[in-house]
Length: 284
Image (cartoon, rainbow, N blue to C red; front, side, top):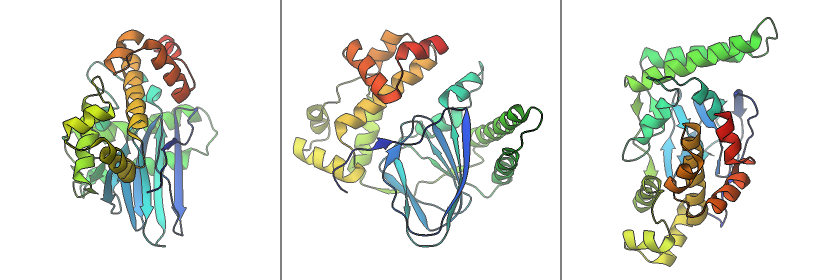
């Protein structure tokens, strides 16, 4: 893969967006990430999906959960029509509907509790029929501008998200573990995400995995398209944002996410999210 850094793509200024897309030719997608959650309902195509260093072979009616900050891209293998429905959902929207005993982010968190993130869900049960039906209802309702249309659409989205979380938390889906990856890179990515508050310098990681600094940098860039420094910085920023959103103080979120200096944290935060962490705190 060429020497490049992932870019943030897509913008979300509303609680959610829905896209029903079909590619009828082979198109090359670059690796990218979003600062919101993404749910993809795969309908058809000859497609692999690369997520956080692992490539998954998709089957129709798979559901893919992509968290904020997760690096990903589809790999289209033939001219077979690649059809999918994509939901963008803002982190603020999910947080605003959290309760003392439930969270609409639970489906994303559960797959991360595994030793290896498993974002592709597959099932032959009735759960997937319900989810696809709810998504179709939401898609059909979006053009409507009648009475309380926005509230109605939001209600349909909430029904979809509640059903998705119920299905995931009751194990109605199985996680697809047939992804292909470089085992060493998978271990390194997992280590980074589990130790964001620790020393994640190139020297420290190379010692941890008994590989040379130069080889680590080349391997990471080759397999992920990302420099280690930029990957670590982005993950720490998303971690801090999540902690602030859930009530942690700005300073605690900064240092517990691995930043050594508060000024560095605030500058990086603004470059990433185009707002200050203090603004997020006032909104939460």
